Image (cartoon, rainbow, N blue to C red; front, side, top):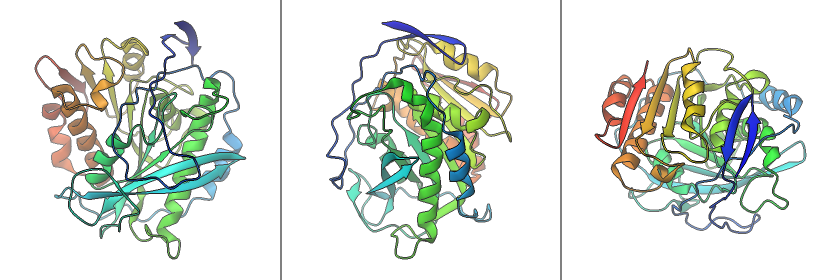
Length: 340
């Protein structure tokens, strides 16, 4: 155990990663199935935040499509997955992109499956320390099956194959995440790309667990604020980069009140100081992240609430917003507070 400070907040951390093993970085993924990856959090330290590269990445982004007319799907999709390698300032960002696919819904994501017809919002998913895109594939697959493109990068210094592993490199991850968003949005207009014409580029959200939750907070804060975000989900995380800045953006917090890695008070403190539209799903007796991976009542509440939130914030689905409180409330397992 050790104590560190992030943005002035004292954390007590258990730095025992439980990430799943991933294929070689240059190999295309096999069909990707879910596995447990709690991704314990570390200290981002004083590493360079990469704000210059972040600004360059944003300026290179394609012009967003008119925020618009897409409607939240009423079906559940099969899911495809493709692997890409992007770079930012010499940093390699191996990224799995999950997306709605043709075929029968259910099961693992299929490697390079044909994209289902339609246009879909983009969600950036960030892993925890010692984590990987494959370790959170179950989460990414559930989001994609509901009608979203999900980009999940492996962060260079903190993924489960990082050599050397450097928890302080977490400070660079918001800029990495923004660069991945930019590169995936470009696929919408890239001739011959399978996702060309399928990404609703004006509808972008972000989510992440543990260190990935802090990364998501960084995307909404200070000099690493990504103005393209229309919604964010912070799971078992807290503040990074100071207060939220820019246009008011809906934020959903998910945190176990018995989290022994990132204290519940860290997420709650950030939530309490947030003036934007917000919700807080408390997992009663919940630990650092098991509810992301199982089929317990709490896990069901997490899945439904995340999907309700992204349907509302990225599809303007008013019925989904009205379901948030009901779907997030499970007697003895989960409760919901908020202004959403």
